[in-house]
Structure formats: C-alpha cells, structure tokens
Image 1 (cartoon, rainbow over the protein chains, first blue to last red):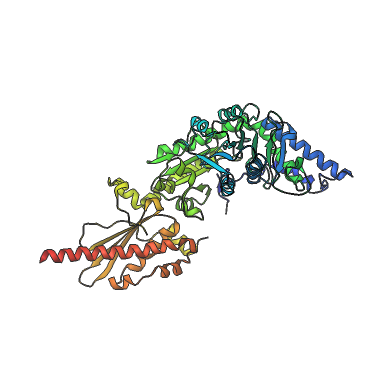
Image 2 (tube, rainbow over the protein chains, first blue to last red):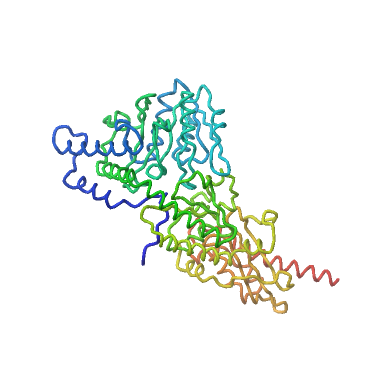
Length: 404
Length: 133
C-alpha cells in the first residue's frame, strides 16, 4: 500500500536528506563527546556543535553564544518560563501569556500558579490575534515575563511579535516567544523583534526529533535563567547534559537550508495552500477558515467542514494524513481549546481539519488531497442528519438536543 | 485502532437514509448533540398488525464508531418485535464491533437512539388511539 500524502507538517516534518547526510558521520566515526577536551574526538564534536550553533544563530539574527541546546521546544518553553520565574522572583511574580499557547507554555504557567505566581491569560479575537492594548494594560510593576507564541500550531496565526517585543522592552519586562512553528517558515529576527527568549525545535523544520534550542539574550538586557536540570554545567550552566551531537549537527544544517530556501519555499507553499483553500471554498458549501488569513503561516490551513465530524472525515480519506480539532481524536473528549478561544462553537470545532503543508509536498498531491476532501465531505454529508436538517431549513441552534 | 467490522460498517454503511417522519407507522429517535460531536438519527417502520420492525434507517454525525454502531443497530432491528428491539444493549454493540473503551459512548448513543425511536412510535400510536376515543 502506498503511504498517505503527508499534510501534517505542524506535527512533525520529515528529515531533509541533506540534513541526514550531514548527521551520519557523527553517529559513526565522529562519535566524540563535545565536552571532552583531551582528545581529537571531543574537539571535532565540539567544532561541529559550534558550527551548528552559528547556523542556528544566523537564521534568527542572534549571536552563537545566545543559543542553548535542549531536547526540544517543550523543554525550551519550560526552561524559559520556570527559569525566569525562579531567577527573577525578587523582582516580581506576574507572567502574561495567551489562551491559545501550546500546552508546554500553558501548563508550565499553571504549575507556577500553583506555586503562588500570578498568570494573566490574554484572550484572542475571532482571528486568533491578541489585542496589544489589552496586553499593555495587563502589564504591572510585578510583571517579569510576557510569553506569546510566534505562530500557532493549530491555526498558523502569527501574533504581532515586533509590537509585543517593543512594548516589553519599553516596560522592562522580559519577552519569551515559542517560535517552534515560525522559525524556518517566516523571517525571524531577535534584534528587530526585541525578543529576549525564544524556543525552537529541529523536527518542525526538516531536522531530527529530540533536539531544540532556547535563544537567551546576552546583552540589552542580559537574561539570566535558573537552570532546571542539575549536572555538569553544560550550555553556560543553563542546561546540563551531554550534547546530542548528531542531532545538533542536523539542526544546524536544517537552519542553513531554511536560510537559503525559506523565501522561495514560502511562496510555493503559500500558493499551494491557497489553491487547496480556494478549491474547498468553491466546491463545498458551509466550510469556514479558522483564524486570520492575513496573519498566517504560508503552509497552514485550518478549516471547519460543517456537519462532518473530523475523525470520521480522516477515516474517509485514509490516503491523506492530516489532523483534527475534533474531540474524538483527543484523550479528553474536549474539542480544541485553541478554536474555542477564537469563539468557534463546539459543533464547528468538531468538524475542523488542520492541513500542514511542507517542503516535500507537490502540486499534484495538493490537487489529489483537495479532491479527496471534497468527495469525502460530500459522502459523509449524505450520512449526516445535521446536513439534512440544515437543508430542510431547521435552525440547529434552536433544536432541543437529547444529550447523553 | 478500529476492528475490521467497524471499518466495514464505516465503508459500507447499511440502511442509510430517512423514512417519512409523518408516517404513523414510523418512529424517529434522534439523540446526541452537535456540540458533543455525535448526533444519531434512527428510524423504524413498524408493521402494526405484527408489531414487528420491517425497516430501519439511520443518519449519523459522528466518528467512525458512531457511524458503525448505528449502522449495526439498523441491521439488528429489522425483523424484531419492539420488545426484542428494546432488549438490545450497548454492550452487545461493543462486543460485536470490538469497540475500544474510549468509544463505548457511541454504543450507548445507539442504544438510546433505538429506545427513542420505539418511544416515538408508541407515543404516536397512543395519541392516535386517544384520538379515536
């Protein structure tokens, strides 16, 4: 059986063959520990790590010393938020974040709340965007950190990072952004955007899983962090643990490729995404795009296909790999909290599908996937009592439903 | 994650469609809610003389196992008396389709839909008899 067309690139991306090539020697002959100072095995590993650090820094406009390697963005988010909360406890105890953040940010904040810190969760509008004025009003003299993601993992919406960064800088508050979905897809520059801390992950940008980084600003201001892992004092004492040298080499190579190809790739994927969106909108009735189209990753599309439950749609188009905000795909049986924050009603959240396009998708694949979505939605609507009622003119909001 | 039987019912659902709601020999059950992600409509047509279900149809908004549970229910209903139909338990559906624990609520919904359809039919019939005086 042919494998399904992969349109779930926000979950993870395949490793680019060029990245894998760069990594292989570091599993084989160049296996040294980058912390070994007494022989050439260690030196060549360290050299490779420093080269990667430079490639990553280059992509985000940082200096290499500001890159701290971690196991991935979840760890980076935890280190940034808990590390700042602990280090700056004297200065304040208030953190501002957003309702649509990734769980790595939200749950780190919730843990801090349990420990007595105060957290403000900013709402978003129907487009998925925060209101900068609301953020400005939320800052007080006990605020130590603002954490706002660059691009959302479900709806691809891009927050006004530069505006937030400048506001944070003006008010003397540190600014962390989870840029996992943004780096390598849209231009990111920590200087121009006034970012103090930034989480990155290799496997969302055609690098390997299990490696990420935290950008930690070294001057204007110099950010300090309380380490969350005790050990050998690697990574300027901020993150102990032997470095994942092959992973880091791959991460570096992945960044170098993105730096060269990002602009062209964004144009190509944006056009394919628009083609997919336009076909679904033209050939199906009652389908809705979730989140802003103007402020959005070029490779993301999130749509609610009314009257068709997300999981059953994914079952119908087994040859297309996507994901859904439907409850049936989650352990909690709750539909997506991100869509809920946008004010998308639960019934439409259950019908949402996330398409994440990537480097290796072709125009033919997108045409095929669009066709499969359209024919599957039509078939399932024939099975849907809701579609039948809607066509009969019944207002579904006014029906007295018999819940379990 | 799904058994072959679920996949079969999902790919080839039996008895999809609608019966005329206003037909006195038809009972309609609709359970679930759109915001919960599951709505099942199940209809039966009853031979009034014999008290036997002669036809059953469904339409379901929901995941694959919700669709399979209702499809299976319509298969089982045909040819049964109303009392026999009422004896169908959600656990029978779980066993037949080998539903995983997270999908048990789909079978509960199917049992509720059967009961609601029979209830609706009996209510319509009782109302008619009252009307006759």
